[in-house]
Image 1 (cartoon, helix red, strand yellow):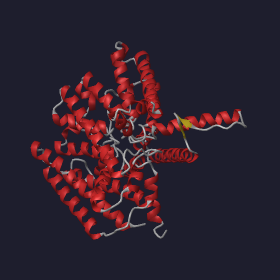
Image 2 (cartoon, one colour):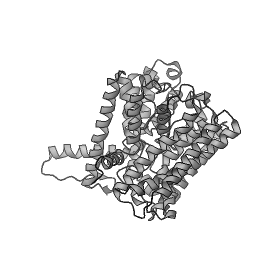
Image 3 (tube, helix red, strand yellow):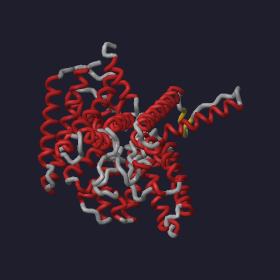
Image 4 (tube, one colour):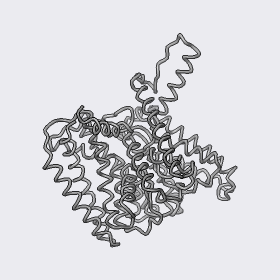
Length: 486
């Protein structure tokens, strides 16, 4: 393992992180609020550490697979450790573990928070909180990939470690060009949504913050009651649409821009994703309309449909915004939302979870196994759309799914062992591992994670990291540290 190269790359990542902190510094300078010194001190520490890493550690070697995975995992850890400094120096977030929790939740686009009164936090820190979403959504590592070739570092294995899902869609033969294309699309969606939200009456600051959280499928809001605070059907519809778009593989957005409509609409994962969202929305809207006993739903199916669509898309894409307290919904609707937490967005999107393509492959694999039992002599191939899925991909999906379930179960057992009720433990675990945000019971839509003890917060932080990097990258880093001689 070439640790010099790995640490050198962390230096570039910290430089980017420090430079990005100048944006909330300007916000703080403009609005005031007492967070200017905290952000400025964080910038100095981050930039100096980055420069030390770059100039002290030398390496002219290229990345191998294990260096790529280790670099990405370590990068996200350092991003949370240094990204939490503004919160820590300001003092309004409590102990450092809370600050790391909030930062990791931001960078991994989980959206869970330890804050009970968001609106009391200065605007500069709230902007940094939203910006961590936006940087983490497309990946600060992916941004680093776009500039590493300028310094003579080949970033191929970083791309393979960073881009989620069982397949990697390269939009250009050169990885740095692919990274740039993805970032251009990402920035474009952010700008377009910001404009639409401003048409709905939001000021520029609020619109940018919510666009960051939407396109990154993060869910941090600048308001205590999230999107429900606006009480605007227009804003809810706009955010629902952009959450859905953010949950789509960004390669498909590229196809759409290029006029490759057939490639866009024939995509099997997109069809499956759309069907899941549509069916779940209809089922929940009918359930809360006929069974909730909540007057605004039982007398207005349009409201029931809109709230259902918003929450289904928010949970499926792992954004975590809310317009209703789904803790109060009937058990069927609440449990269906919990089920959707496992699905997540499409591979190559900013969404978390297991990813729609993996769920689709699991369903098709199960169907083939049933057919083999009924017809032992027959041979069945697994196809997704027009493409044959190789056995090694199926094995990878099965292995990932087993790891995902085991880690989720272990996290749930740990939280339950610390004395938290089963529903809180269950949904906090899947919320963190799936990078979703809200859960049920004590971590419901209008609640927060501040009540957890430091050890439980540590487990949830680790779960967020595992979920964002799809488990294997983090396990390779742990293996490399334990078995350094190999």
